[in-house]
Length: 417
Image (cartoon, rainbow, N blue to C red):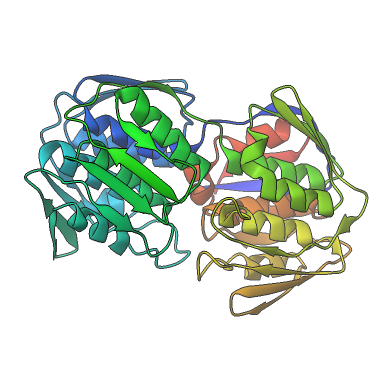
């Protein structure tokens, strides 16, 4: 197991390009199950979660090949329909094979998911939606057994705008008979990217990016040759890093409109942000101003940026209030930040962060994917040396983050623990 060693206090300068989005690549790769034949994806990041989804689809009978950022998969030979516990427990996105398998083959057996311990995140909305489309689903020793002779279009109201649920139901509806309408659907950019890919396969979809998505099912779909969108959360993390360290960083390849809520808050905190051709430039302030945030589904402030923004607020002038409205257990990074000298108090789903003049390096332990990134950010700004342990969480969602930060001038190194 590796750990990251950071000697803090280095100013970040230079230009860096963000990788492809993990949260877009995973459902796109699962969408390949909808149609037999060779599929090709570019701009796919090299991450543990991509390794996991590749192993999962290979276990279903698909043939895969990867080279650099290219991911090729032939789903013609898929003849297995079970997503086993050993794979699904490490990555919740594995449940996204449920809709495509059910739509194309009429059956699927999928373990109940695991992943980061940041909240319950139940998949009951996936199940309710598929049942509304005619699927029969039963729970059997921790597995969902699903069958359907042919899925039928339905009007489905989601109790909350679940991203995974919206993706699973969109993919299933693409091959269902008739029209499916998803109400209170998720609006995240990754949903739009998936819809764009499904349309390129021949799917009929309208309304993606809004809370009502209509899908007219078609008898069959074609193969994919698709470029994955850039990772907005990696881009946001780099923007926070530049803001914390009085940096001057040009972040290339990102879509600034996907981060409007974060950009507005960073500007309030004092960052100077300018849009350039195909890039965003971030200059950090001499003194960070305290800013309140409330996480909400897109287009609100993203929950996946809450821990990183809290890292920024630990050094702000004054006190900030951070309210987490998406996941009920997403403050586990707080105790580790406190080890570095942060002044943070938790009250239910709210954190009160009183900015301190400086953070002091210490050994810390990552608890989940975004928490690990927030601790790296704190280490970059802290005096002396910070050790971040259990960084396998980081490798689930960030492609060579320490190398990118080192390219910008950070004194950061990954070593075996």
